[in-house]
Amino acid sequence: MDWGTELWDARERRATLPERRRETEDQFEVLERHTQWGLDLLDRYVKFVKERTEVEQAYAKQLRSLVKKYMPKRPGKDDPESKFSQQQSFVQILQEVNDFAGQRELVAENLSVHVCLELAKYSQEMKQERKMHFQEGRRAQQQLESGFKQLENSKRKFERDCREAEKAAQTAERLDQDINATKADVEKAKQQAHLRSHMAEESKNEYAAQLQRFNRDQAHFYFSQMPQIFNKLQDMDERRATHLGAGYRLLSEAELQVVPIIAKCLEGMKVAADAVDAKNDSQVLIELHKSGFARPGDVEFEDFSQPMNRVPSDSSLGTPSDGRPELRGPGRSRAKRWPFSKRNKTVVTEDFSHLPPEQQRKRLQQQLEERNRELQKEIDQREALKKMKDVYEKTPQMGDPASLEPRITETLNNIERLKLEVQKYEAWLAEAESRVLSNRGDTLGRHTRPPDPPASAPPDSSSNSNNGSQDKESSEEPPSEEGQDAPIYTEFDEDFEEEPASPIGHCVAIYHFEGSSEGTISMAEGEDLSLMEEDKGDGWTRVRRKQGGEGYVPTSYLRVTLN
Image 1 (tube, rainbow, N blue to C red):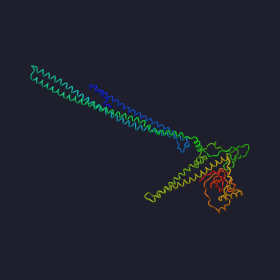
Image 2: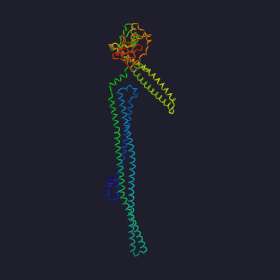
Image 3: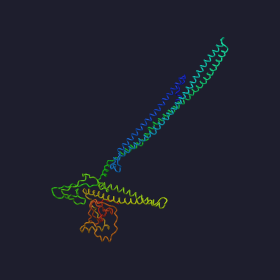
Image 4: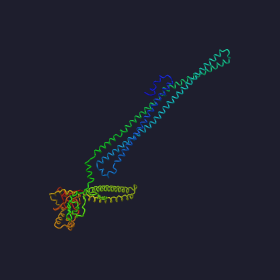
């Protein structure tokens, strides 16, 4: 079914030419209104999609602004709150919302490019094509009307010439019968009648030719030309409808294209919600703010009725770390208990001594790891420069070996500087760990008793026989100012001095131990020791003191760290 055939079904019932012309005008108006409505619908849909794109862009922009507003300002490594699972989940949700906004922007972009621009361009092409088809139809209709006017003119001329010829023939016949008419008048009338008859015959032939031409043009107009134009308009309108349907489909396809990513965003939000771990957050809070301070002992009763100095007990807050009592008179102020003391303005130091012991240890450990990484990087760079220098020396055309000397020197200087910093941080870290372990030992000492030493005797080792004899001799003589564990027989040791063994680790004394038996050594609570030999299963560990002296102590009294 096509417009060129079906829209002309009723034309055979119209006998007169004006009625056919009116039918042509009517059908033209129908198609003109319909095709214009289709183009208006296309433009209206393009405008709808454009406004939809603006809505999507505004929505995505607002979502991104919302994410930016609630996203943490500080980097994750500098923000303590980022270590909590609740904060991490919230940040992940914000990131998923930001990705969701990106998908909305993608929808807007696809609609703008594949729908708005393409359909708007196609609409302009359709308008030009429609204009061309209707201009072609108007020209054909004007040509047919022009042929019809020529036909009417030739018809009227033929009619007029026929009347003039008939009138001239009647005049010639009347003069021929009139006896008073001269022969000249009769001849003239006959000539005029013959002329008029000839003119009428020519008009007849012209009218017949014009009628034949018009009928041919009219048949071409109604059976070929106009049906073709109507079919072209039908094809144009169907193509427009097809493109409009494809535009409708693109609206849904743009959404379906981002559905998998949006589903992942929603799934990521769900995973973030399930990742909240209350117990772990409680542990993180402990790790972040664990001070390492020992718990304070009982507050002593201060008797102000006696004008004498009070001697506090070991558990008092006023007892110094060396065990000597602090003399405090009535006029002396006593130290505040640390949980309730006011915070003074903190002065940041390089060794982080302004922090609590546990936090100081963690920060020093971080700095030490960073210095080690930088040191390893410089060492790797030095090795690479050496290899490059060797290549330049073997292949001079590749480069000048002397050009690498400044970089190699700079790298060596950096390595030396970083090594010094590593040593400095290692020393600070050892001191911080000693403080932490000392505080832990002090806390444990107040609330727990040290475990019993092993029932078995310490191993008899030649490496510590001298130390044992030194301990015996020192027990008979009064202790010197430098400590009772210092070696005495220095002259004898110099004759048989051997290379001392290297420590295999270090350890810290958790409890005080009196090395009274042979082969043992005394140690104070919190004292740093060098680990010389691990426990062989008998409960004893061989250690060396910093002041000198080597012997066995109970393994349960130590906190051991191997190299």
